[in-house]
Image (cartoon, rainbow, N blue to C red; front, side, top):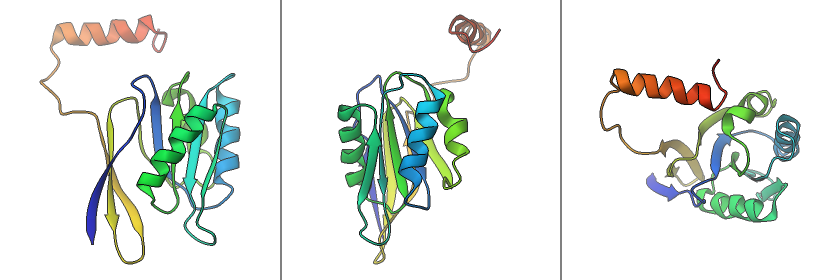
Length: 160
């Protein structure tokens, strides 16, 4: 077995969701879940098929994001793995609907942080071992940090 690292290519403002599914209809079902979650959502989606023609299936509402998702999927090249690149939406807006898609097995990561995908390659193919999402902590929050966190969440409307 060989371990590989794939760095996800994206712009800093993009959010990325990486997951695993099990069926060809994943692309259409995730597409429907995304457009029904956020009106006007911009995204690109790519799914690595793992049997039959073994194609990278894709969809989206923005051609540039769709091409970026395809480019990342080519690098990951792990069967039944999907990647979504979001531009004007956040994972918190869509994750519940994606998790409710019958074919979705797991979500590895959902973040705007820099991201690396850890791949195991065997004679059979490739599989995602996990995802490195962002950087290591620099410390533990203090009272002022707690107050700032709470104020920020209320400012952006996620808490009352």
